Length: 165
Image 1 (spheres, rainbow, N blue to C red):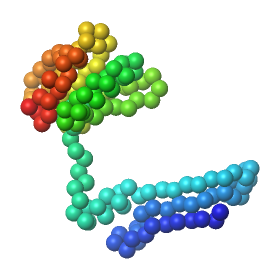
Image 2 (cartoon, one colour):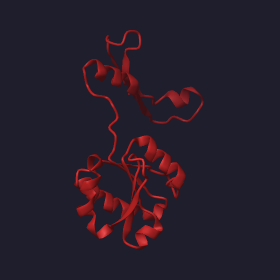
Image 3 (tube, rainbow, N blue to C red):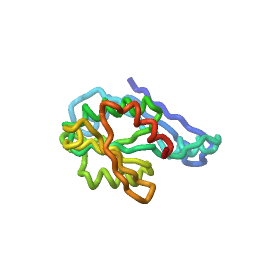
């Protein structure tokens, strides 16, 4: 159990380690703790991206068509069902993945939507959902126009979110 591994490239000069790790079964004991089996590893994401760029790969972060704003974690199951249909229509959607009860405030989610570059925000508020609707807000056309769309007709309106159409 004295296994250690390291992936090294010569393409990055002195910063050539891309990934490394191993078994650390005796480490806790060596620093005064009880013996415990352990394994760990690390990956240099920036180094992997550098190698991908060197190979001509496109490493740019894609801009989503829409950003889902879900102010209440209780709305998450229904929103996820709707988003599955939206994505099936070829629309790329991002959302904030909150921990516990918090999905983040409306304000923080709108900031994330804006910084994502998405053309639309899909707002899954309690009022909208109780009416069987989602609010679609334009983020890039300068008007900030909003419209309500039926949850029952997602497949008919979702394709219009693709590529700002």
